[in-house]
Image (cartoon, rainbow, N blue to C red; front, side):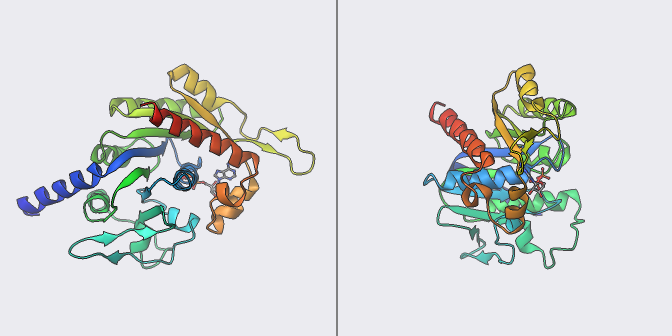
Length: 272
Ligand code: ADP
């Protein structure tokens, strides 16, 4: 790439970031803990507060965000010279994901590291996000090279760590917290997902993956504990049909727990 092109791109990224008030990187020590579910529902919840929200799906291993929001068939459109319009999910929520670039959602993404990073850079330099109150980034899982490169690309970001309640998650959480600390990120805190299942028949709680690991991890690591989201079969059902559970199942225990987490994040930002 020519030197002036690199400079141009860096300039564009700086300009994009200067129009975004807060950035939240949602990440987890490992995959499958509900990181994407949290990123999607957090973005939706913030946008419902009349905030302008952008969601950047950087989890290139499984770009499921578009499916969870029911917009997977859409295509990105260009906006003038060298700019791309994000997908408008609602009036206040826009999304960019590589899902919109894939011809076939069943084809695994086998792009090599540098190419993936190039794409994420373009999601910042070439996308006309406009002025945003929040940019929520769904990071690839883990604390390896990919999340690290993404985190370095988007400095001065807050980190939200998603974990499950098993004791073993303490190890993952510790890695995730250290990762965020090394990058000088503000740590919003830890969310414990899949925390107990309320039996639909008898109403008693079954702790499938134990309970409290995330809370213990937060205490031990000295970071805020934001709350527990129970396992709710409706979350799977709604996610699969492209409907965020906080909107389509607002009275559930999971939605109420989630709204409390969102309120804590908003409160922290009001006081920062
Ligand atoms: P990750 O991004 O960490 O890989 P996902 O958000 O894709 O995880 O979630 C993995 C699966 O678990 C999805 O099918 C999702 O619907 C489901 N899921 C996430 N959180 C919950 C929950 N609290 N209760 C029930 N299912 C959940």
